[in-house]
Image (tube, rainbow, N blue to C red; front, side):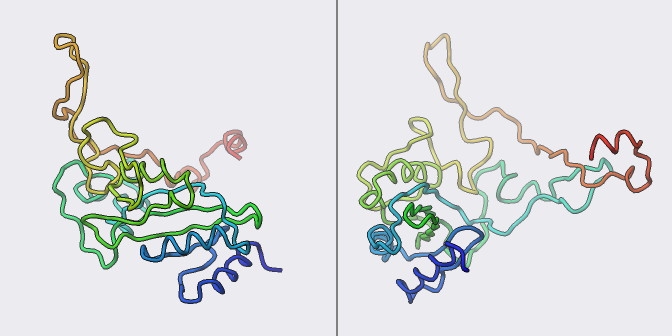
Length: 242
Protein backbone atom coordinates (compact mmCIF):
# COMPACT_ATOMS: atom_id res chain seq x y z
CA UNK A 1 0.00 0.00 0.00
CA UNK A 2 1.37 3.41 -0.94
CA UNK A 3 1.89 6.08 1.70
CA UNK A 4 -0.14 9.29 2.00
CA UNK A 5 2.61 11.43 0.38
CA UNK A 6 2.82 8.98 -2.49
CA UNK A 7 -0.94 9.04 -2.96
CA UNK A 8 -0.98 12.84 -2.93
CA UNK A 9 1.96 12.94 -5.33
CA UNK A 10 0.01 10.85 -7.83
CA UNK A 11 -3.03 13.08 -7.35
CA UNK A 12 -1.03 16.27 -7.99
CA UNK A 13 0.68 14.76 -11.01
CA UNK A 14 -2.78 14.08 -12.45
CA UNK A 15 -3.99 17.60 -11.64
CA UNK A 16 -0.86 19.28 -13.06
CA UNK A 17 0.33 16.96 -15.87
CA UNK A 18 2.65 19.62 -17.35
CA UNK A 19 4.59 19.98 -14.10
CA UNK A 20 7.36 17.37 -14.04
CA UNK A 21 8.84 18.58 -10.73
CA UNK A 22 6.25 16.91 -8.49
CA UNK A 23 7.85 14.18 -6.39
CA UNK A 24 7.96 12.72 -2.88
CA UNK A 25 10.83 14.04 -0.77
CA UNK A 26 11.22 11.88 2.36
CA UNK A 27 7.89 12.51 4.17
CA UNK A 28 6.28 15.24 2.09
CA UNK A 29 5.44 16.12 -1.50
CA UNK A 30 7.56 18.73 -3.26
CA UNK A 31 6.90 20.74 -6.40
CA UNK A 32 8.19 23.82 -8.23
CA UNK A 33 5.86 26.40 -9.72
CA UNK A 34 6.58 29.30 -12.09
CA UNK A 35 5.67 32.76 -10.73
CA UNK A 36 3.12 33.28 -13.53
CA UNK A 37 1.25 30.14 -12.44
CA UNK A 38 1.67 30.41 -8.68
CA UNK A 39 -1.68 32.01 -7.77
CA UNK A 40 -3.71 29.67 -9.97
CA UNK A 41 -1.90 26.60 -8.65
CA UNK A 42 -2.19 27.79 -5.03
CA UNK A 43 -5.93 28.37 -5.43
CA UNK A 44 -6.35 24.85 -6.82
CA UNK A 45 -4.32 23.39 -3.99
CA UNK A 46 -6.52 25.11 -1.43
CA UNK A 47 -9.98 24.71 -2.96
CA UNK A 48 -9.83 21.33 -4.69
CA UNK A 49 -11.15 18.72 -2.19
CA UNK A 50 -8.69 16.21 -3.60
CA UNK A 51 -5.90 18.44 -2.25
CA UNK A 52 -7.48 20.58 0.50
CA UNK A 53 -4.29 22.35 1.52
CA UNK A 54 -6.19 24.77 3.71
CA UNK A 55 -3.29 25.70 5.99
CA UNK A 56 -0.06 27.54 5.18
CA UNK A 57 2.39 26.54 7.90
CA UNK A 58 5.54 28.30 6.73
CA UNK A 59 6.99 30.52 4.01
CA UNK A 60 10.65 31.43 3.75
CA UNK A 61 13.24 32.79 1.36
CA UNK A 62 16.26 30.93 0.00
CA UNK A 63 19.47 32.32 -1.49
CA UNK A 64 21.13 29.79 -3.82
CA UNK A 65 24.17 32.02 -4.51
CA UNK A 66 26.63 29.47 -3.10
CA UNK A 67 24.50 26.34 -3.28
CA UNK A 68 26.65 23.20 -3.31
CA UNK A 69 29.82 24.94 -2.14
CA UNK A 70 31.55 23.96 1.09
CA UNK A 71 33.93 25.99 3.25
CA UNK A 72 34.69 23.46 5.96
CA UNK A 73 36.99 20.46 5.86
CA UNK A 74 35.26 17.76 7.88
CA UNK A 75 36.80 14.61 6.40
CA UNK A 76 40.38 15.08 7.61
CA UNK A 77 41.83 16.33 10.89
CA UNK A 78 44.62 18.78 11.57
CA UNK A 79 47.39 18.31 14.10
CA UNK A 80 44.99 19.39 16.82
CA UNK A 81 42.39 16.83 15.64
CA UNK A 82 39.83 19.54 14.89
CA UNK A 83 38.09 20.44 11.66
CA UNK A 84 39.26 23.70 10.12
CA UNK A 85 37.86 26.25 7.74
CA UNK A 86 39.43 25.67 4.34
CA UNK A 87 38.60 28.96 2.63
CA UNK A 88 38.09 31.92 4.94
CA UNK A 89 37.79 34.45 2.11
CA UNK A 90 35.07 32.68 0.13
CA UNK A 91 31.43 33.64 -0.17
CA UNK A 92 29.08 32.40 2.50
CA UNK A 93 29.44 31.61 6.16
CA UNK A 94 32.99 32.98 6.41
CA UNK A 95 32.48 36.22 4.51
CA UNK A 96 33.52 39.32 6.44
CA UNK A 97 33.94 41.88 3.70
CA UNK A 98 31.48 43.67 1.45
CA UNK A 99 31.53 43.82 -2.32
CA UNK A 100 32.14 40.09 -2.70
CA UNK A 101 31.91 38.84 -6.26
CA UNK A 102 29.35 36.05 -6.38
CA UNK A 103 29.80 33.02 -8.64
CA UNK A 104 27.87 32.96 -11.90
CA UNK A 105 24.79 30.78 -11.68
CA UNK A 106 23.01 28.75 -14.32
CA UNK A 107 19.76 29.08 -12.41
CA UNK A 108 17.84 31.76 -10.52
CA UNK A 109 19.37 32.87 -7.25
CA UNK A 110 16.34 33.54 -5.01
CA UNK A 111 13.29 31.44 -4.24
CA UNK A 112 10.24 31.65 -2.01
CA UNK A 113 9.44 28.26 -0.48
CA UNK A 114 6.00 27.61 0.98
CA UNK A 115 4.95 24.69 3.17
CA UNK A 116 1.29 23.67 3.15
CA UNK A 117 -0.69 21.22 5.27
CA UNK A 118 -3.81 19.29 4.33
CA UNK A 119 -5.62 18.26 7.49
CA UNK A 120 -8.18 16.32 5.46
CA UNK A 121 -5.53 14.09 3.89
CA UNK A 122 -2.87 14.36 6.61
CA UNK A 123 -0.08 15.25 4.18
CA UNK A 124 2.33 18.14 3.70
CA UNK A 125 3.41 19.89 0.52
CA UNK A 126 6.40 22.09 -0.27
CA UNK A 127 5.99 24.60 -3.11
CA UNK A 128 9.09 26.32 -4.49
CA UNK A 129 8.79 29.46 -6.60
CA UNK A 130 11.99 30.84 -8.14
CA UNK A 131 12.25 34.61 -8.69
CA UNK A 132 13.23 35.17 -12.35
CA UNK A 133 15.23 38.38 -11.74
CA UNK A 134 18.23 38.17 -9.39
CA UNK A 135 18.64 41.96 -9.20
CA UNK A 136 14.99 42.58 -8.24
CA UNK A 137 13.65 39.21 -7.05
CA UNK A 138 9.85 39.22 -7.16
CA UNK A 139 7.17 36.55 -6.83
CA UNK A 140 3.39 36.83 -6.35
CA UNK A 141 2.08 37.29 -2.82
CA UNK A 142 -0.03 34.48 -1.35
CA UNK A 143 -1.83 36.71 1.15
CA UNK A 144 -4.99 36.71 -0.98
CA UNK A 145 -5.15 32.90 -0.66
CA UNK A 146 -3.74 32.30 2.81
CA UNK A 147 -3.92 35.46 4.93
CA UNK A 148 -1.34 34.10 7.38
CA UNK A 149 1.32 34.53 4.67
CA UNK A 150 1.44 38.23 5.63
CA UNK A 151 4.21 38.16 8.23
CA UNK A 152 6.04 35.26 6.57
CA UNK A 153 6.40 37.31 3.39
CA UNK A 154 7.48 40.39 5.34
CA UNK A 155 10.19 38.29 7.01
CA UNK A 156 11.42 36.95 3.65
CA UNK A 157 11.47 40.49 2.28
CA UNK A 158 13.39 41.76 5.29
CA UNK A 159 16.01 39.01 5.41
CA UNK A 160 16.42 38.19 1.69
CA UNK A 161 15.06 41.22 -0.18
CA UNK A 162 12.43 39.16 -2.02
CA UNK A 163 9.51 41.31 -3.17
CA UNK A 164 5.98 39.89 -3.04
CA UNK A 165 3.78 41.43 -5.68
CA UNK A 166 0.30 42.15 -4.32
CA UNK A 167 1.29 42.35 -0.65
CA UNK A 168 -0.45 45.41 0.78
CA UNK A 169 2.00 46.14 3.62
CA UNK A 170 5.46 44.90 2.66
CA UNK A 171 7.61 46.43 5.42
CA UNK A 172 10.65 45.16 7.29
CA UNK A 173 9.74 42.97 10.23
CA UNK A 174 12.89 41.96 12.16
CA UNK A 175 15.64 44.49 11.46
CA UNK A 176 15.97 47.97 12.91
CA UNK A 177 14.65 51.20 11.43
CA UNK A 178 16.87 52.40 8.60
CA UNK A 179 18.64 49.04 8.29
CA UNK A 180 20.65 48.71 5.09
CA UNK A 181 20.82 45.43 3.19
CA UNK A 182 19.32 42.00 3.78
CA UNK A 183 21.19 39.97 6.42
CA UNK A 184 20.39 36.45 5.16
CA UNK A 185 21.85 37.02 1.71
CA UNK A 186 25.09 35.13 1.10
CA UNK A 187 27.00 38.31 0.27
CA UNK A 188 25.98 40.13 3.47
CA UNK A 189 28.99 40.46 5.87
CA UNK A 190 28.65 38.43 9.05
CA UNK A 191 29.85 41.32 11.18
CA UNK A 192 27.16 43.57 9.68
CA UNK A 193 27.57 47.11 8.43
CA UNK A 194 26.99 49.20 11.55
CA UNK A 195 26.77 48.78 15.30
CA UNK A 196 24.62 50.69 17.77
CA UNK A 197 25.02 51.84 21.38
CA UNK A 198 23.41 54.26 23.78
CA UNK A 199 25.37 57.52 24.12
CA UNK A 200 24.86 58.96 27.65
CA UNK A 201 26.06 62.39 26.49
CA UNK A 202 23.75 62.63 23.48
CA UNK A 203 21.10 60.70 25.44
CA UNK A 204 20.11 58.63 22.41
CA UNK A 205 21.10 55.56 20.45
CA UNK A 206 23.90 56.24 17.97
CA UNK A 207 25.05 54.19 14.97
CA UNK A 208 28.76 53.73 14.23
CA UNK A 209 30.93 51.65 11.87
CA UNK A 210 31.51 48.10 13.05
CA UNK A 211 34.50 47.79 15.38
CA UNK A 212 34.58 43.97 15.61
CA UNK A 213 37.71 42.38 14.17
CA UNK A 214 36.95 39.66 11.59
CA UNK A 215 37.86 36.21 12.85
CA UNK A 216 37.16 32.63 11.90
CA UNK A 217 35.56 30.54 14.61
CA UNK A 218 36.75 26.95 14.54
CA UNK A 219 34.20 24.23 15.39
CA UNK A 220 35.84 21.95 17.91
CA UNK A 221 34.69 18.66 16.42
CA UNK A 222 36.81 15.57 16.99
CA UNK A 223 36.19 13.18 14.10
CA UNK A 224 38.31 10.27 15.32
CA UNK A 225 39.89 9.26 18.61
CA UNK A 226 43.12 7.31 18.21
CA UNK A 227 42.76 5.83 21.71
CA UNK A 228 39.95 3.61 20.50
CA UNK A 229 42.11 2.33 17.64
CA UNK A 230 44.97 1.39 20.01
CA UNK A 231 42.70 0.05 22.74
CA UNK A 232 43.91 2.56 25.34
CA UNK A 233 40.44 3.49 26.62
CA UNK A 234 39.85 2.01 30.09
CA UNK A 235 37.01 -0.49 30.34
CA UNK A 236 35.00 1.64 32.79
CA UNK A 237 35.27 4.73 30.52
CA UNK A 238 34.26 2.66 27.49
CA UNK A 239 31.25 1.35 29.43
CA UNK A 240 30.21 4.86 30.47
CA UNK A 241 30.33 6.03 26.84
CA UNK A 242 28.30 3.06 25.61
